Length: 80
View 1 (cartoon, helix red, strand yellow):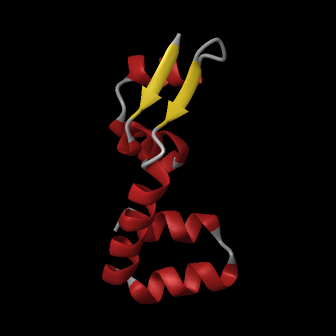
View 2: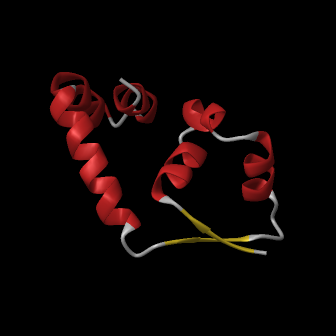
View 3: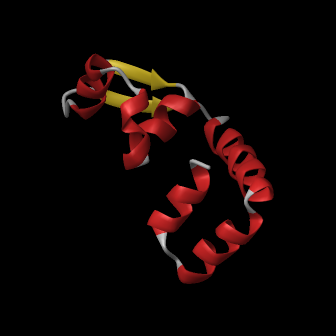
């Protein structure tokens, strides 16, 4: 099956501590290797906007996470 993902769905799927936002049936579809996952060409742009908003709200945490290259710290920053 071909699945076109909304940006929020994609972000919740790839950021481990946000997976709980997705219903179990949705997670199963996304994890099924037989399905093809697609993103809109607008998704990178939307993601950049979301990251800039989060980092503006939590500037010191995001700068610290970026400096260390620590994905977990950046994820914590992204979830507020």
